[in-house]
Image (cartoon, rainbow, N blue to C red):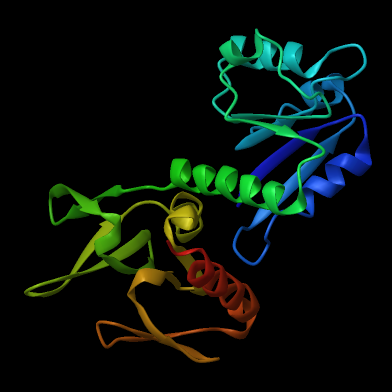
Length: 236
């Protein structure tokens, strides 16, 4: 899930920008704030923060300065009706400067690039797990699936010599939060699946490239189908 904040005193402009997000590819949650004070009071972490430059009381540039001083790591994007940025705006290190009168195609492309960058920043490339008494570093792309265990999870990794199973203390929910942006989706109360290892998908089961079949429960079917569709459409 990509968390987006849009701070704009013109709500119609904020809604228009949200409509340029391709929800077939990106799973997002968008919060709209009418001014800087509303946004600051929320005290929530966002992956990307979109700011109108001109707002009452506290401008977008002033809010960006405040966020940089707080060392907020979110991507900052300016979204404005102003034709040219002020000379001082670039020391705030915005990721994009969007003009509200850009063409729809241009705004869609810009939003796609912004959200792709968010996904890249959220991706996890390694996890640490236990192998007997040793702690090992596992490349995420080698994980086939993660299985619920009594005290944590089992990580199933396919190696040349066959399957190897490691253990972690994190719950399946915690692993999903960590790896959701890295191409993993839940298909069942007991399984978190690496989409890179899916060879085929039916309504009630997944065929993994390693030849394993994993169940898809009715409770997770719609979410898994959407996640799988997003993964296929979003692959680069």
